[in-house]
Length: 281
Length: 306
Image (cartoon, rainbow over all chains, first blue to last red; front, side, top):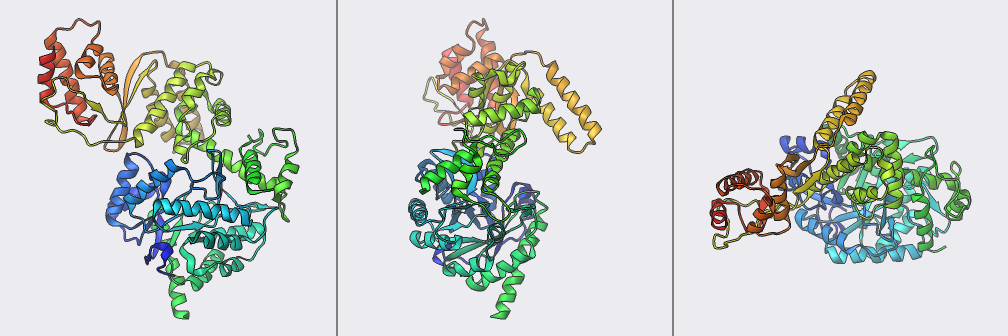
């Protein structure tokens, strides 16, 4: 859905992640980009160059915040200090919606700095949804949760991942950041059909879509964000937008980052699929 | 097994140090087989056992935090060597895992921890500690708060004994070794090394080792500060350092002058000139903020006090 309650009724096109190696190019050349996604934690600081660059970007571009450490599924409730810093950044960026991952990563105030997978149980869904509601109530903006790539499944799981995602977002009444690369990676690691996943999520709740590259190892695939998007992932993307309609789409490229043009051109390939979808419909 | 139990078990496994060959430990802290521990809550698949699936997360954790510490403390690594640095990093991260949402704060307790674990930085403990302090100060200065810089004339002229506030991001270090020069040299070597052949890299490594070996104690007083969003090191005289420390502690101007020049027999007119030049220089670097200003009125007030 191009505009829905979960992305603040906005209609963003194809964006890319704002990354340090591209700062100079963006500020000097002022390329036309629909929007940038920032990693919230990189700017939840008191001052200095990162905030200065962010302010310059905000003068010209639309920015959406994406977090990596809210850990909605962690045992403890959301950290108040973290939330205060995040809210301060939300006011600065005026992000129309905010995203973070459907995962956990900390226990008793100790952080793993990883996106650990959830056991797909009704208990975990209720707990996670409660935390999402608490964060949304504090921040007072729409929240969308992202499905993560995973490398392990739990013995206690009671449902498939997309069923768990659906359970959580409906209990929390929040949006979905549908990462089609993560769907593909997990489908290969856990032997499920990625189209079952895409067909199984509530399309009307998809606020945004992520695309990215990954690395293939002998026995599993790792979500590394250091390659172009492969064709099978684009195909999953095509099916996703067939269900959701044209949706704010963002390319993540976090390691071995090539030039700005290369990253942006890779992201803009998404428009071909949007055009094909429009013709087909 | 409920959610909390799974999370505690998995977290313990993920945080457990890797073996020397960077694999998951065969046994947990209680001596139980990790194959059994993993199988209790992780499903195997047709390619990976429960142990191997859990191991992916265990390895990711350690690779991530070790890389973050390595990036932040290149100077320390150069002083003690890569192998000793890795041992130190693992021991530190076991004792002081991250308690922050950001990896930026991973090294926040390193100096404190090293003071009670000096065996990790022998035989150059003094030099290594100074380097850690400098590298942490640089992190703090990079993204610390900057308040609006005061323009000359903002001084509360009516205050006969004004206070001056330093920018919060400013870091004041009293060091026993000239680690500022050493850190700059190490970084230059690292940056040159990125474009060099193996043979040249090896020679540069030797040159860096020699630089470290040559370091003799030499007390320096350093201000780590930010200009135009870049961090710089600026050495100051001992009196200037005492002066800045007193300002940072919120002392009044008169108390600051007394503290800075305690035990020094300097004629009043010369003292005025010294302090004036400091203020001119520091003002131009934007070091002052807050309600008071190092404007010309200050010089007048200084004259009234002395």
